[in-house]
Image (tube, rainbow, N blue to C red; front, side, top):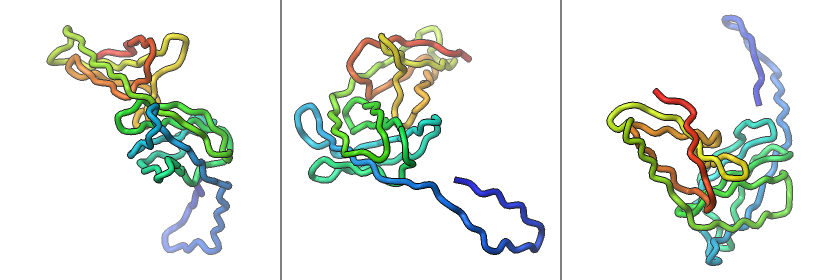
Length: 169
């Protein structure tokens, strides 16, 4: 949240009151497809307005619970990636009961564009057959950059994907 202040030289702002919106914690119960608890998780939360609310690394507890704190109330999208596993894009409403999440092994794309080898850059997305763009916690917009004709995208869920070139340089 923001509070704008317009101060003159030597002026003192007394009795500034900042009212924060309510925020709360979202609890995720994580398991791998093999029933184990993932050891490291990178996450990003996106609010209903499309703004990124919180990003971070966390370690689930021994019961597989991961707590994401200080989230604004209301609908959100959680982008979650456990090390070595595919990204999960999870719709959520804060607050809610704990959400169960199963993470599956990741797929990976090694993209090569021979005509751009050694020079040039390409902005691209990975679009899922049936709708949706692959996003990850470090890249919630889902736009990737191939430099010198090459890029690697890891953390993909299994499925059919199409590489869509957005722009070239």
